[in-house]
Image (cartoon, rainbow, N blue to C red; front, side, top):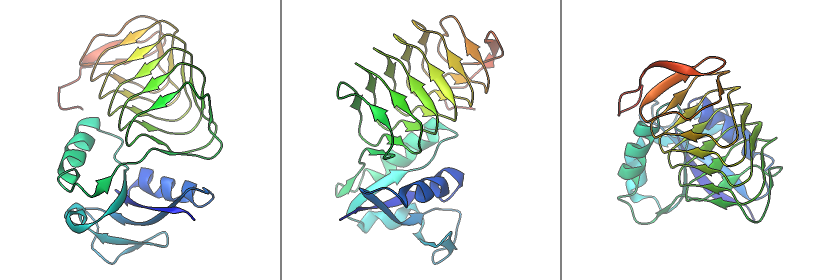
Length: 215
């Protein structure tokens, strides 16, 4: 029997996860909560139960589908966590290739197909991973980080917390990415990146500061 999960956010990421779970043998999305959509609205065949406060009396599993700003995501999770009867399970697409030496933190979601995570990798809590992600050996991904589509990360890479890895970005093996770093789409990161910056280009270069609350 499939386990049921409520999705927080009926934007693009939430709707795509709901679609992905249709063929998942472990999880079933039963509806959304979203502060911007009226309760009772149907979104792609699933109901919006109400705003996030609807979860105050909910007991069960929740998947937070907020991806663009990791700091907003953290605030929402803190808000939801006031209800001790809510769980943030690890949810992964059924065709993910991953060794048994990989650790995935609470609330981490591997939303779609074509992801490969090799060996001795640690992914912290509440990380969102989209489709076509390759993560090399002995790497670490910090909490509340978002990984968009078609990202390649080499071995021995350390990625800090609250980062965003834009679509098509590549990170060279052995690189360290600081906390609260935004890596632009298509960037090729060939050297360490400090905290609180935006980098872009090939090779990736400093573009501007990234405020502590995110872009």
